[in-house]
Image (cartoon, rainbow, N blue to C red):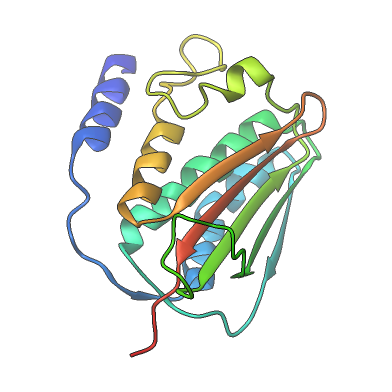
Length: 182
């Protein structure tokens, strides 16, 4: 079973995500993901807290890929957060004028996923998006979830950053370009 799981993850990582991009509401994608992961969080008595800003600009994206992106990150947060911990998911318009990865005045959507988990060491943080890198025990992780997530963000022309301190939790910050009004 383990070999099959690794092979499926490898195939997913290598497979092009296609060009099925369409106009999307990022909040709807997040809500769909929460429905999928809520049972896992509830089993560990985790609190999933949402703060989704209204009236955000739409984005162009592949809905399946974006769901996978957020599932991977939230499942990691669930795994590394002790029982009874919290995971905070927020969306907002991002107006960082210094962000060079986006076209001037394109507008961005910022999705933050923050947990109260054990955090990540500086050494692990440097490799967190590397394929096959995992801090999970042998047999519990393939080390592909975050590298796949990184690839998805790149395919969407966005950025993903992670901030963490051991013992204080981890925050993933995903920025995606908003659809430019025509």
